[in-house]
Amino acid sequence: MDARVAVIVGSKGRGSNMERLVLAGRAREYPGHVALVVSPSLDAPAVARATELGVPAVYVARGERYGCRLAQALEGMDLVCLAGYMWLLPTEVLRAFPGRVLNIHPALLPRFGGKGMYGHHVHEAVVAAGETVSGCTVHYVTEQYDEGATILQRRYLLAPGETPESLAAAILRLEHEAYPEAVARVLGG
Ligand code: GRF
Image 1: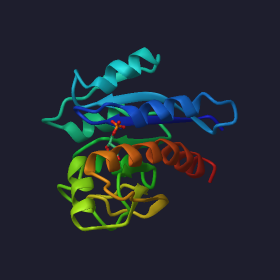
Image 2: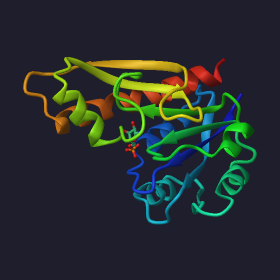
Image 3: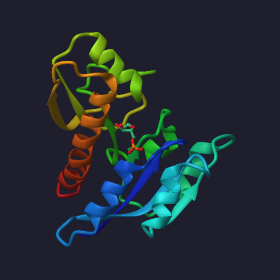
Image 4: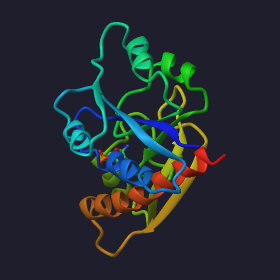
């Protein structure tokens, strides 16, 4: 099966996870491909990157009837992957894709997740807490931040003197392997 995967990026998204999913989908044995990138802002670097990669990208502005418009844009997709998307996903989308929306989080959930725990905030909190292990989590998306069932986690042992910046870079490298693997698992049943 060559499933159609949509990636929803963040308004300021770099799109590095989106790119990894696109490239993974181009491998012959991979069970899906990224057919659409959706962005809540026109000038997200991720949109430019998607275009360079030859993947259709659409802009769905937040505001009135956002949930319906977003669900409409995603019609025909088999799986939805959030990659850098910062808000709760509208219920219209969750209802249209039951058990078929994934997210990646740059820590080992349920620790260091929830509202406000995104980007550098996560890595700063991990270092400030004196943690020796962090990682990333791919999980199903629900109506709450970072609460759905875990699909896959990758662990990372913090190096002595690790800073939030070095940790962020290390975790992002892990994410780039973990997300395509988790998507393949979900698509492969
Ligand atoms: C990643 O760190 C991911 O865990 C989080 O947002 C970031 C997106 O990065 N949800 P990128 O845009 O994919 O580079």
